[in-house]
Image 1: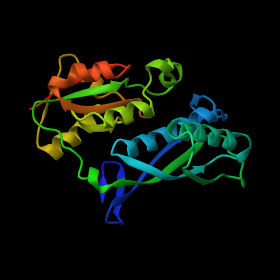
Image 2: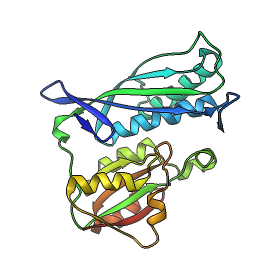
Image 3: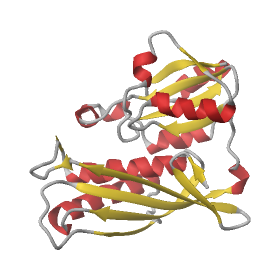
Amino acid sequence: MKWRDLTLVDVHEDYLLAVSCDSAGGIGDKPHDVVRTSPFIVGYHTAKVALMELLCVYGEPILLSNTLSVEMEPSGAEMIRGIEFLLKEYDPRHSIALTGSTEENFRVSVTGLGVTIVGRIRKRYWPLKKTEAEDLAVMVGNAMYGEEVLTTEKEKSLTLHHVKSLRELPYVREVVPGGSKGMAHEIALVERASKIQLLPAEGMEPLLHRSCGPACALLVTLRKEHLKDLQETLNIPVHVLGVFC
């Protein structure tokens, strides 16, 4: 079955198999790349998107597969180093299995890669909590993409640790990574699932349609009386997008 961008398979009485993925193209240090940055950064952020999608639904990653449309040396090795750096951020023991492939037959002039993560979700967390009327919708982090991601101070950036913290808060309903379609797309899915509608906060309409790049922001829904608690828990921006009714 599908759950947002995840594919779930019921394989065991205690847990679901979960598959997440992400891809990137035209970002790197090749001659025809549109955004210039290091292969390390590209590998890190692409893997971060797939991992965040899993963590937001209480998933536990088991295996990561990287399909790199570049040569192993030097670009592929640097991408893998970025991926491994991310995995060590998540789990210092780096117990997640890693596999992948590179392009060795042809010289490529533009960067491309895909990351797939296989994990599991314990059934005690499923089905997930749903958003209710009078809950708040907030954006944690900043909606940004391209060069903005590379120049924003790390202290203001969304991390895996923020996702872990949010999933432990009892007053939080849903945690959803923002994508290239912006918060409006994610909110529409919440509205459809819970049969509610968001009343946007004043001045927030443009922000709802801005790309969130490589999971640079999260849509978080929560009971409105706990907004201050959330703001005090996190050390990155929290933007109130509106209230559901």
